[in-house]
Length: 309
Image 1 (cartoon, one colour):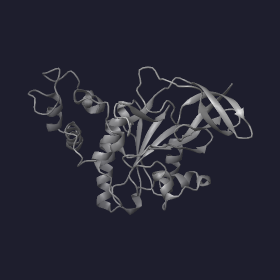
Image 2 (cartoon, one colour; image 1 turned 180 degrees about the horizontal axis):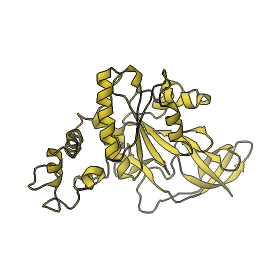
Image 3 (cartoon, one colour; image 1 turned 180 degrees about the vertical axis):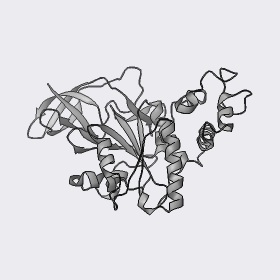
Image 4 (cartoon, helix red, strand yellow; image 1 turned 135 degrees about the vertical axis):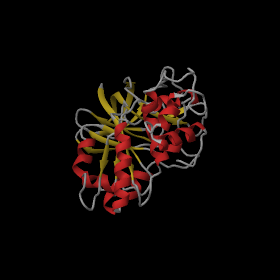
């Protein structure tokens, strides 16, 4: 029996990298697997640790017998079976969102939605603000304020520019010896940043953003890229698809750290922080202790509104 890491899923077949020699095998599951208490369309996901036996060395195939206990996972609604989820990735050390203040502009609503999704899966997040070389002095001031706001509530921020070699070592160090989920809008420079620290991957712009077909009625097949020894990245489809799928309105504020800190201080136990009297969150927004922009993101998620995505 051998141990390995699932680095690609294409439905019924999986690519498994052996721990012993990093050889990549083509694997399939032995029988049907049911993960206790989890209704999913895919029993196995990228990032899963598995035990397998070699089936055919000529055909390069193995049989997967066992899935090890997951530390965490990130899931979205299955596009085909609405009552089920589809696991995008498992056993993540962190999530990284790459954003740009301009060229193109990443909306704060998109960033906040990503942070809430990651919080709901208990996955730590770092925000990477890319293309800082293109910003005016006024925009740099705006970015500094934005980053300070996020850092104050517990999200580290890194500033990067590939042409000017700004923050590249920090970006490399961030991903070192970790399995990282990477997300961000098309055009923010994900693949350019990755190629800068891992030129051997030679990713085309479309590879890291489009290897997962993002059509509404298609299946998402994820791939893991190895940057260096023990350093891996996994790209995700758009955050709309990840979606806050299992978060009830009553618990949404739990995934805003600055609101979570005030838990129990509102007059009503079931306070939703919208228009209730003696709400500690609304009072904190009024006093500037909670950023108004974050509160607006919260309200838009409560309304399931698209305009801040």
